[in-house]
Amino acid sequence: MKLQTEEIKNEQESLSEENFDVSEMIKSGVHLGKKRSASHARMSPYVFSVRNDIQIIDLDKTSEKLSIASGFLKNTMQNGGVVLFVGTKVQLKNLVKDAAISCNMPYVTERWLGGTLTNWSEISKRLDYFLDLESKKSSGGLAKYTKHEQLKLSNQLEKLSVLFNGIRTLKKNPNVVFVVDAASHMATLLEAKKLNIPVVAIADTDTNPELVNYIIPANSSSVSSVKLILDKICETIHSINPTS
Image (tube, rainbow, N blue to C red; front, side, top):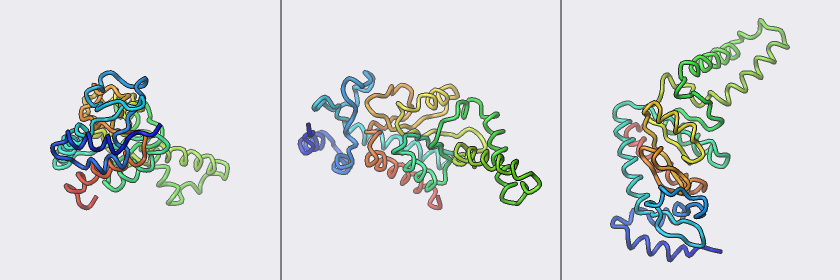
């Protein structure tokens, strides 16, 4: 059953003092949360209403929280901080990768490696091995091996590239972790929480907001919704670092 989009738009605009991009967010589907049966009780403060069993996210809260998150990220960038972008959902990972690259920031868009934050010393060793192997291949350093060994090392390099290419510039734990779809990245949230690394996250109505420091309540499954939020975040980062 089709949601009454125009009615929702009018209702939310009437409650939003600043009317902050409400039309744009409605058009991008930012307001569409999960089914009521899949919701997390602690997300109720960010729910505007329920239509046809679908929770409608309060876009006034989205605007407010996006503004707060952007301010925090701006302060982080002004102090030379590094933001690690994380988003591994198939339909979203290219968006996350492109956003991170445009901001000149590291990213994880494939499988999250357990211990990426909490066991950085071990992860960094594997990262160094990947970079060294990559360097040897590009400089012809693998020529001394047999063809069988070269093939084996090339295959290994290909697999390592998938996992480590996005964090090749990361020299230590990031200052902030930005997560797309918090509910599907629990391992990331828990590692960040353990180390007191602030988390900024796009969180749908199935998320436990207590695991996120700076929550952005929004539809985290829709490509258009996530792209809109990422564009706003990148605008903030670019405003501090225009060359990124």
